[in-house]
Length: 405
Ligand SMILES: Cc1ncc(COP(=O)(O)O)c(C=O)c1O
Image (cartoon, rainbow, N blue to C red; front, side, top):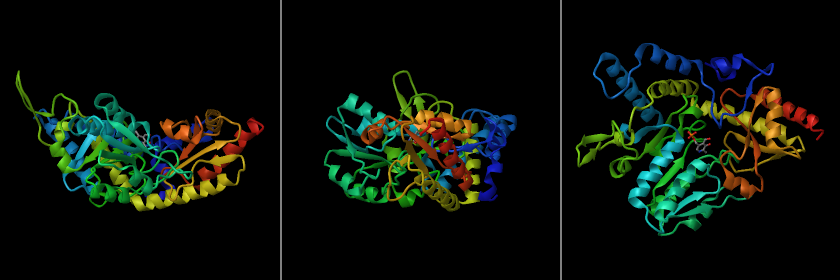
């Protein structure tokens, strides 16, 4: 496989959208799936499907082995120390809800502080809000600066003796800012404060080594990593797997159930209640094979070059305002266009086969700070190239013509 020709590995690009070649610039929302992953899903259903961790028949044993082999694959990919540190969820949102709920239940009390940032996606704010409602916790927001970054000094300033957890994004899905997570984790460790990283936008674009990053929790969205929908991963450091209470109740997460008493599994399965995603977990191993074959550093290099080229191109258009100029930027390019609403931009661009997203991108706090209700966002995946950026730029000019702007 070769990154230059990678589009041909993704069947979605065979079709025309409104008579034009598809320029898919919405990967921060969800990435497209390569043929190998699609094949794995259908092959699993055709030949190997069964529920996992329950029956003892041949198919069930095979499916269970595949499922657990996928956990091993994720452990290896993330360089996590223990396989029990890998918990499957339905998405990054559920991963963060799990931590907020289980950690909050046991460790957060009235007046305790949860430190997040103004960059956070609603998925890394709303789950903590429940602790504000239920426990009287206080949520503190580290402020975003004029470049769309959050500085380490800002985090430092807000830490107090009451800080119970720091929950921050790895890469902003709006300004693209790559946060100094290593420094934040180092700082938090000095004060014995656990750190959750919302790695939704980080994991698809950078090398993630859990032993190196050394955070307590890291949330991943598999559908943004060329993987199936409805699957996320929560990396949870072993000490928390041992210490935290279960999240949801149901089959698979118990040890013994009696009329008056229930005991729970004492490992990661206490967080995996009910029938789990089977084809999704199994096929995600294929997504990781795909990423590994290309090499995540090669992917990141290609995406950075594409992004830089796109930024340069868009900066040449005086009507475009690029949102944020962070010190280092992930694969996200948010912009506004003079006098044209972002939803109109997205609709007109679609006529040229250019798929972008418009709205607040689940970051209303940040948009309020920016003084905007919505922005347009082009986000990049491995299948995008400079030609796509040219087409984006041309489609924007066409949009301006429509609006005589
Ligand atoms: C920064 C960030 N956090 C969390 C999420 C939610 O992820 P999921 O769709 O896996 O629940 C998203 C999705 O767009 C995101 O961009």
